[in-house]
Length: 536
Image (cartoon, rainbow, N blue to C red):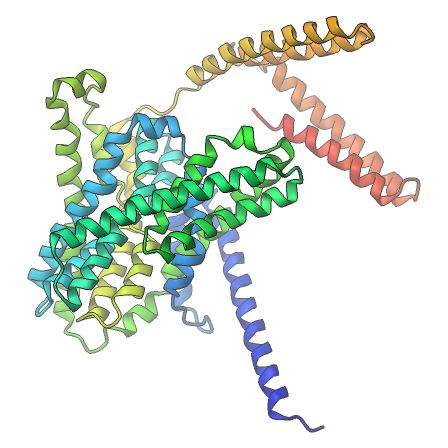
């Protein structure tokens, strides 16, 4: 049977597409397997993903991966930033604005300066502008791994809030500084040029992000279809990022501004049905994308090593080790003075007393770098003098901080014995507000019943009991831990009852006594009730 060139080309394109699809599916399977493994080993998921990626990179038959920086910066970064901003407490962000600003702006610029000077001194023939470009690339920590460890080991909420807040803005500071440094490689750049670029990036990104958020909020308010709401939440971060980048503003600041503004209006803008759909979807997106980027870091090793073949081994190893030490030490050199020198001002000391030294110690060590640094190196260092060596140094910094600091951070947290969130205090706060909410609900019920005398008394009694029981469930969590709480017994027994109900309906479907559509509606109700029972 004859085939022409067009058919062969189409077949080849199809094969490439299918092959690429299998690679993506394979990576997702690896992420899921690593997530399951991380539940059984004392290693945070992102760090385990990197280690597994390393191991797989040398398995025969595994293709050589090269991270496409455009995919990371345009496809992965906006949703990850948006998800992080969405889940960040605006109240905590405002309360910790000073330490967050000192880390996300001051520390990034300080690290860029220190690492740039160190790299310029240890890498023979490296231009100063290129050295500062490397400093900007490795300056921003990736807080995904740090906060994953922090939450797993029970760090104080304020430390976690500071690390999360730092991660929302530091990428913007670093990428803006990097653009100026790359421009300086090709020509002269003044301090005013840098200041102008920085102001444009920050102010322009914030303005576009807030405008995008306002438009998105109007669309959500005028829509009552949950599916459309969810699709809009998927489009929003990309829209905000691309609009900002189109005018040379900071896409990172734009996405963060959009996410923070909308997160404060989440419960007023979205319907309950939209929130029920969107929240688990974004949890899955965050999980998959985070796992993929960390696995890809590990798989990138052979490609990075290919770029430095032929370079003197002493120069390569010495430069990588020295720059990595400069990255780690510069964070500690900044964090401790920034924490305590500000308290010399009486007003600051009164409003925010100095924390114990363990707080800055943990923050100093939680400076793991991530995929943004590696993607920036691959995107911006091509054509820069000694770009291959600088890319390798970036890779070493990322891996050394992710694995070295990531594996030792839990040990450090345990050694410092920092107190984690208090379950009793959380329960007390919940119980007090839940009691207030229950009283308000009963009061509203009485008003409605007074205006509608046709409501059956048994319905009113059930509604009043429901409100009172919710209040009692909140208070009883403060009770004795030596016995099973009534609410826990209720949930345990009700789950067993629902399991039996589900089995009866499935048997009726299999016997042809109810239609599939009827079963779907009933199962949705049973599943919803079971989800409500899942809270401990």
